[in-house]
Length: 182
Image 1 (tube, helix red, strand yellow):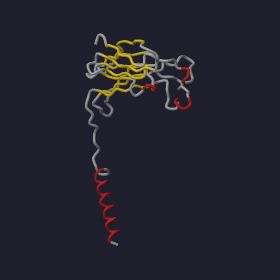
Image 2 (cartoon, one colour):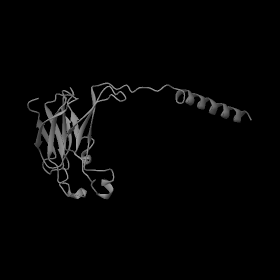
Image 3 (spheres, one colour):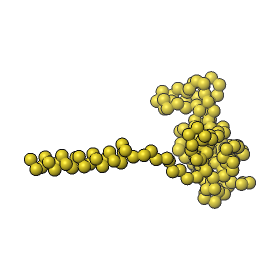
Image 4 (tube, helix red, strand yellow):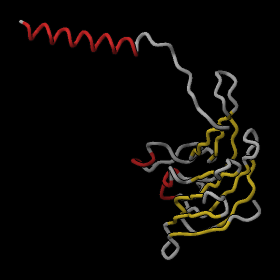
């Protein structure tokens, strides 16, 4: 009988503590530091494209979204700019310089051509896009450069002066590209 009492008492204490910290706690605002949150979207892939190979209709452009901080309900600014990319290269298909002023996006698969309906019809990507984020409310494409077929990842050196890019191209698996005219 004493054992049942202790088990019941222990369960009651655990439940009381859990309720105190969940059900009765005040909502907490997210504490996010920084100027913005950046994310890429692949407009010609659905989640189901991995399994069924079908592309969406209509196909939307690939984009870089910039969610400006602080996040305030009904007032948060979201900016966007077209930046060809592929979910097959995510999550490292883009990177941002340490000072947050420039983003780089690689394109593993190219944009769907008119009439394309399946994943196999997507051309290999080869593009690196550089985007000016000095004003994150108005991101601007600075330039686009053909690098090598099927780049997958991009990483910016902390100095912002060098990019390391991995590709699916034989004999060009790793590219080191100096960043010019910062």
